[in-house]
Length: 303
Image 1 (cartoon, one colour):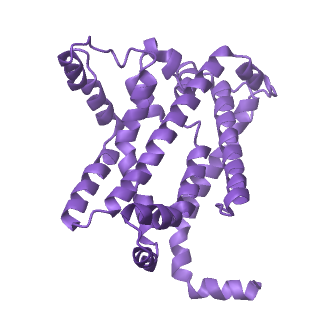
Image 2: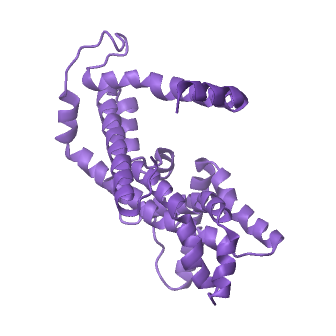
Image 3: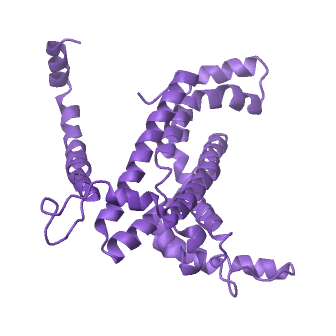
């Protein structure tokens, strides 16, 4: 496209481009400008000297990072919890979207949408409080049911093997319904004539979903999956901080909480920045790889 044509398009749709300015400024000042802080990962950062006066130490903190058994334990926990959330919550969001799409009574559909979307708008402080109340070994509703069945109460928040699943299932409860919104939007964009053609061919509801609805959602499913893969090391730190305790560090400690303890609590800012830099680099690599694989296999990609 010629430069003159681009200018003409911008002039014609100037109001739309003006609406982009706040978002662009937000990204520049809160995403790109702070990136200069990555320098501290290669320094022995001193809060009193500042970024530009602290001594440069090269890859010292990365060497410490990759030689630390604790880091690999935390990385393992992060991957397990993240993949657990991906494998449980992501398909469930698609299933919820498919089910809501089949409800024909408007009031009933709105009721279920409200019930499913509401948990997303609750803060993690409230959700963690509900989880601790429900999982209490003495008064929790879940342990009440377990004791009624003749079993001993289970200390969900104290058991190393169970705690990761508490994180996985509580986030699924909170966000799976809200995550279905984008898939519902994708379904609404499917040409209704395809359903009519499927009915004429004798397809029942299940076959319509399998051969019309899901293929029509493939692009958005791939997009969301690639974005989720890119954030695989970004376990919700707030959720973990509110629910975990020292007895479950072995399975519940994740990169975010490790950064918090080493960077903020111990004032080891350079080491924490090195961990954050590693996390971002892995996320970028996964997004690029996922996008490339998607383009090669299906011909669809983000870019």
